[in-house]
Image 1: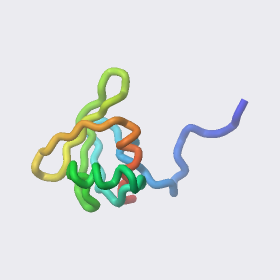
Image 2: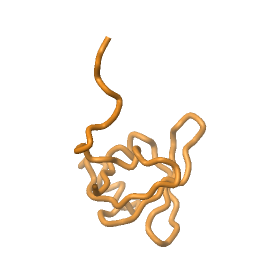
Image 3: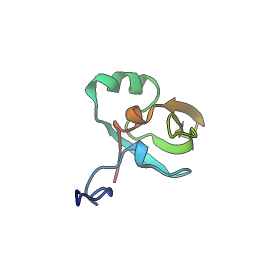
Length: 87
C-alpha cells in the first residue's frame, strides 16, 4: 500500500479542476500547448478571472464563468486540468 498523499503540495500550481464550487481564481497560463489554442479561442486567456459554476453529477463536465461578462463555458475535467491558476 502506498503512503502517497492525495493532497497537492503547497507549492504545486493549482488548476481550474482544483476549484471548489463557487470558488474563483485567475488564469496564469495554459499547460498543454496542443490544447492552448482551443482554450484561448474559448476565452481562457491568462489574467482572466474564472469561477467554478457547476459540476455534472458524475464530475464531468464542469461549467466555468469567465471574466466580468458572465460568459459560461463547459469543459471536460481533463481540459480544465491544463488551465493553471495564479498562486
